Image (cartoon, rainbow, N blue to C red; front, side):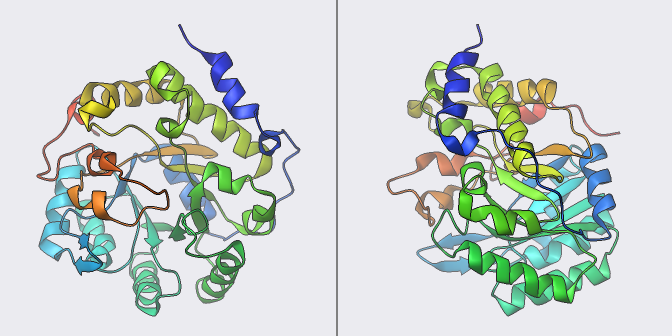
Length: 319
C-alpha cells in the first residue's frame, strides 16, 4: 500500500514547498530546443569515469582508453551522458561519445572557476555542436558550501558571454533550488539540473519502490511551479550497498522500474539514471554532510569492473 500521506507531509512540511505561480522566463539559449529534444528521446546516464579516482586529495586521471571502455559498456543501454567535470579524463568524453553514436552530452564543470575546465568545455562545444546540449556549472556548490548563489550567478554570466548559444545550468539538491535566495540564479538558468534523493528522507526505510518513485515525481512537480523551463533530474535512485544499511541490488532495480512507469520523459521533464559505475574511492571523498557515507561506493548501475547489476539487466537495450 502506498504511503502517499507520509510523502505529502514530507513535501509540504515547510513553506519552501508552497505552490506559487511559475515566474515568466527570461530569454534562453538558442540551442535549447536540442536539449529538449534529447530529454524527450534520449536515455541519459550520469557518468564519472571508472579510471578517475580522488584519494586523500590526490587525483588519478582516467585515460582515454579507460573512458572508451566505459562508454562502450554503457552504449547498448544509454545514448545520453551527464558528466561532473571537464578534466582529469573527462575531457575525452565528448570526442569518444561522438564516435560511439551517443545523441547528447551535458558537460559538467566541477570547478567553474578553473580555466582548464572552462577551456575544455568550450572546446567540446565547438568540436561537437550537435552533441553537447548543455553545460552545468558545478555540482552542489551551494549545498557543499564551496560557493554561493552569487558565485554561481557570476559563473553563468561569464560562460554565457563566451558561448551564448549553449544552454547553461547549475546543479543543486532540490531543497536548495527552493530557497528564497536561489531565485535570481534560478530564473537565469536555461534548464534545471537537479538532484532528488528519496534515500535521505525520514520515511524512506518504511516505504517502497512506488513511494520512492512517487516522491521524485512530486518534487519535480513542485519545482515546475517555481521554475518555467525544462527540468532534468541528474541524480536519484538507490545504492546497492552496504547491505547492513538496508540497500541491495534488488531494491535498486525495483526503484528504476517504478520510476520508468511513473515518470515518462518529455521535452519539459526527464531523468537520468544515476550513477553509471560504482566507485569505492567515494567513501573517502569530500561530502557536504558530516559522517561516514559507505553507500557512496555503491550507486552504480554497473560495478567498477563494468559488470551490469540487476537494474541494468532488467533495462531494455536501445535499438
